[in-house]
Image 1 (cartoon, rainbow over the protein chains, first blue to last red):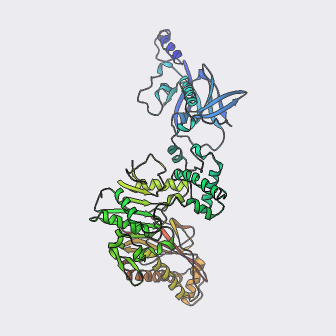
Image 2: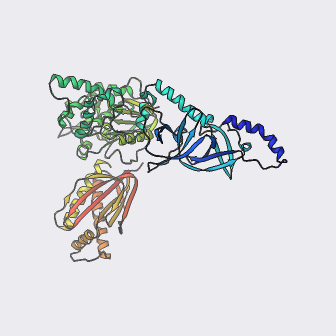
Image 3: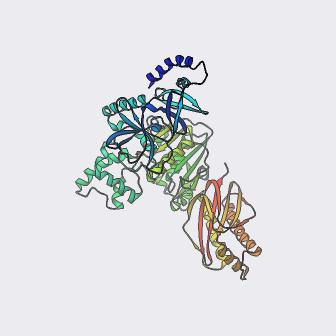
Length: 450
Length: 154
């Protein structure tokens, strides 16, 4: 097409002279115009075989995202590209199965392209076509052969050959690269809220694994997602050995089996005061305090052991700061005893002992120490009015939310956490979107915003 | 919502309702609801201020409201007239005030606003950025939902 346009440009001076110097430019270039993402585009009519309505594409696995599939055009099989996806333009929702499109006849082959809607055929003078400006942002410049104005609208003229050659290179590289590596796993998950528990890696090929995923969800509301997939796969190997030795069935038949499976999932010292050893581990992770007030959010505090342990560690680390710890749980029965927790003196680890007072019913914490913690009956998925946070401490909670809620809660964390803040997950959990978080050095499951 | 606030509201609602209706009252399961709340038909609202900010909403159908007002006044009322409205407001005031008194004993300072009454069809209450605790109460003449939304003053 470009060579045709050039030859027209060369011819033009003669034409003008024949017309006696009139300023009317001859119509020598016709193009079919259409819209993509609300903007106007044109393609040289000479490359267009026909205007078509496509339905029933046959999906081709492992092809590039912009390849919609193949289509049977009266016995000829042609491939169909979606230009909006190729150019990263928004795709308007389309309820019907029918898509507007054009079929292009190129030098080598015939391809179909999907567009938002076909407008009309307009005739212009090739003299009015201006070269594309190098700073055009939304479409890679190599696909544009020029820009033209017609009845007050600007049309980008696409170069059909270069679009097709893109497809050719894509195909070639597609054959060379294994399909799985084309999209990083994190991107696939975060962009798909309706993600079903489909295994991402090759290891998930075993059907027993899928079955265990389903039964964990049914019996214990535990969702296997990238958050805990690493643990899940590892545990599956152990589980297989364990069940074989006991000559028991691999599958989870009851809630008890699910609990057995999840046994190694829970973080250290769940449901009791942290040992001095664990407290020392967390103490090491904590960085320097950013201010006089340290705001902490502890989700899933249960009966309050975790919240008190955390308050003890923070008080030791930041003696000069005011600590405000919001401890939430949506289990009303568990949390209702938390503000006035009673315990045996011998259960108390050393780092918490400065805050204990003896009472007639058992030991409890000093009022000043208790005042650092606000126990709230709260569902973490509901809006909250927390200030910006220094720490978010949420161990083994998010795994019990469905994938959509997991995505929501991680974005909430990202929003609420200060730039220097730290997110601490369960020992066997990692952030869904690994690109948004980075592991704190020497820690097992503490993350900062990246 | 802070755990310490829950019991005073539950106890006050139970005690006052039982006393004024002189009949059995059954408390339903407590739960949390976020922001938008449809209103059954009659809603009495009491605002809270002080250490916290928030409000308590007493939500019931018109028939339940008339039923309660009839029992409290000792005469059969047939419509949502001035007397019935004043009675429901008074009930809201009594419950909230008793809860606030209990909270005061625990060291929390709350003030309350005079009750306001809303009646109508298809109403909805939205409080952004705060979730509400729902205390459902089953009475002889219907049910009341007590909807408590409180947050700390930041």
